[in-house]
Length: 218
View 1: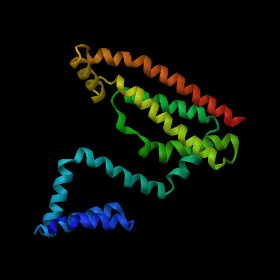
View 2 (view 1 turned 45 degrees about the vertical axis):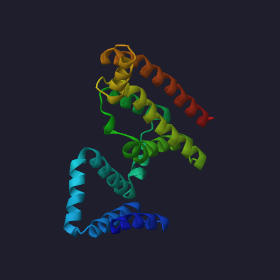
View 3 (view 1 turned 30 degrees about the vertical axis):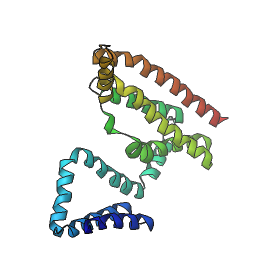
View 4 (view 1 turned 135 degrees about the vertical axis):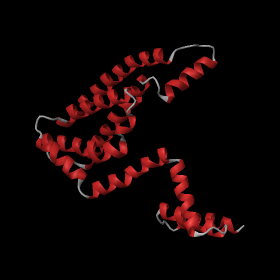
């Protein structure tokens, strides 16, 4: 029963609002020591778990790096750089990014960008900088709207662009579900029919971005 002390550590740590990563780590060591494991054995178990799941876990190494860069002024520099480029408007920036993300998603390169590693530290500040260069100082509500538009550009582009990639899990899942219902379709055929949807999504959301920029100018 002493092994359950780790659960008590998690409950107590979350109750007092400690750092979740610290709480889980301490809980793991408490559980290991209660199970008569040495500290080195507990550490080895951590390493084995990370190594066995490295393809998933390595993604989370990106987040501390982004946090360090943000603390060093990444957002401020991105906002300043785009402010110097007078020819880049908010609409052009978001449309260009959306086109790039649709193309990369169609090639299966979804992980090269995303909300955490690109939109928050780079795209959103650049979009704010492009708007400030033409509209002046922005209020908080406008800033939040611009950030939402930046996130939407990422999500719409990837959501409709990824189905063009024939080896994507969702495409194969749809093929399997259709096959179980007696509808046989090739993955390539399904991917080809995703192209019109991706083009329509780009046109529709692109129009929404341009209308949003127009409202800001007014």
